[in-house]
Length: 391
Image (tube, rainbow, N blue to C red; front, side):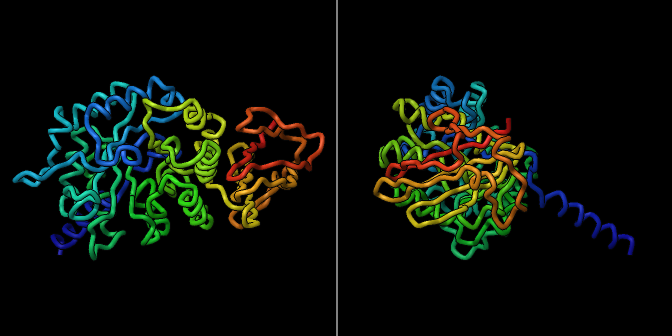
């Protein structure tokens, strides 16, 4: 009997240790750069090193971006022991040397794999090698793992991702775990205890309609996000050429209102001044990185015109006015109403407009509050973003 009890205790102890994630990571949404949206499989060691250099020299690092993430196509096969093999033609120095270089810049290093037998690009996936791969990533110095969902056949999403989580925890290196399951199994309902962020939709495309379609699917998810666990509406397309500058400003603003991970996906070495201005707008980034960790919610939906509200630390708020339509709109705005706006998840608080100043976060200037009700023109596919700042 004593032997049986001791065996059960050991089993429960093991389960308690293995079924954990690193909780002190991603207390604000991760910020960085990922290779896929611009370069897809055309990725190599030299390119990634250049992006790390540009992250620093362009001021992106100073703006808060810290992860350099290689997406698919760095891996080529597995050896006779099942160890993942790096494509030496494109990464001749190996992944650890690349991670060391990125770390030398004061940045963090991220890598990609997939929960299925093969990745989305047909490279070897992680299925059946979760603990082995996690040990390898830890040995290489990986700080962030994006884990995709291609070629998974009948796998259960929750159980599969939990296995990888346990592998990462057993490897004893704090690694941010990004679940890229596309929202099919509603990960927002179960992934909080497994990963630090989870995709809520299919892949973004560098077009206005794709970006807005993803926004539509975020409207009911605010209650599932918070410090250390984030809804991920996919990576940024800012600067990749498929949208106008105004549309990219809208894209970036909305992702920050959503408290979304901010993974730039453009060529950092060839940014236009307009792209750099968008990606490095500290006032907008501050909404995304706010310590309270609340995802914004859609307060008013009049079809082509929406108002999004985000509650911030220090009893502050942000309001985003969105013109989804193709024509200029003139809208009536009551700042007093915006300040008091709430939703079903938060109890209404007592706010007095006189206790706040209102700042236009794209114009970078304070708004006159001689009248609390004003008329504002919104260009097609544009936003106005205001922050209510305690005096």
